[in-house]
Image (cartoon, rainbow, N blue to C red; front, side):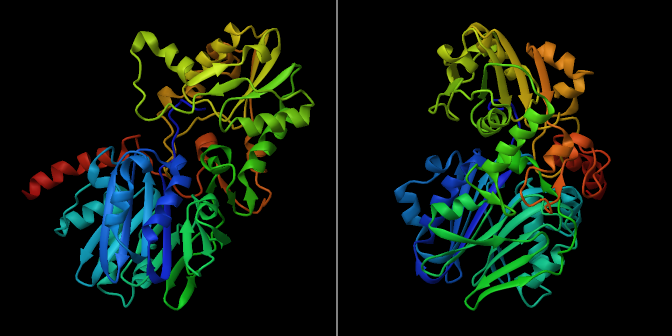
Length: 484
């Protein structure tokens, strides 16, 4: 599903050292490892004895940070970083994270992965009290909540505990103060967060374990849903007051979002994807000559399908590694060229064969149809598509940018056969919802499958369009006019 518009919101990282050192460089390396979680913008904030320095900007990590800009961030003992893809807030530069707030009790910096379903209501409450918001992201509401509670609490971690009583939705956050690094995760655990330790004794927290590997840190454990972890001069402290709910990890962390070399909730992402392919082969067999995967997240599932079905695995596509954000999108009558530039078929492996093509999902179906056309042009005798997830039928409210229903092919078409005709394949089959709950080796880990079933781990808002945050703000505009 390499070209269709399914995205995860963010990735976060934090480091705490007991000495002053180049913490910004460690965050920089970690953000490289988390780049797949957000390619729109990124930032780093550094704490040096209570003095915060910061750099944020639009673009990939190497676009925003150079050797010179990292040096300007200076030395420190705590730093946090963030990579972002916006599901709310658009490309407003004030939404680029981490956010830095200066208040009467000191400095505070926040980075957030997820999506709140009550962010607009929280914002309204603060604005009616005189607060001034500079952006439209959920994170700013979280920051204001922490600061408001900190004015009444004895510590920032105590304030975070109070804040979690008011937040609804998905949030995996890192918070930096003058003396502490705090990480906390929503009670359902929609998105991952883990704790690690470097060889010099520094502690790190990250959205995925692959970031720990990049900075040479060893994995300690996942931060539990609802847990608050505070790292300070005296070590690590845990508060599990908000723990205990049945987990609701986004199942797409295993299917698509996370890097294959990450381990989440004790389960290898790469192995989970292979398991998805194996389940696909059991549930939806078909006679064929070769199994291929659509790069990149379809490859492991294709390997699993091949192993289970005993149909040979082959390389069907070569992906152009040098197509980045600067790629100029073609005009309307050149859209097929976009696929050809990004993806090329190895004709010798395809010609005259019955092909099983594995991908992680189908969103709108337009790009999928073009990829199938490439296989036909390369001489494929038959094309059978197998998808390592169920069909998208419902919106996501918790940080995944699932398109609106009218654009989802599974909502537009009444049957799987109709979808197959539209994308031009000989047969089409999806992974069952039941199988998605068996992808992780740790089967005790609960999943959110709301985008497939319409059943969510927490009560979903009755109306929440794709541009939900801005729409909610517009609903309040008449109220503000009355106050004027």
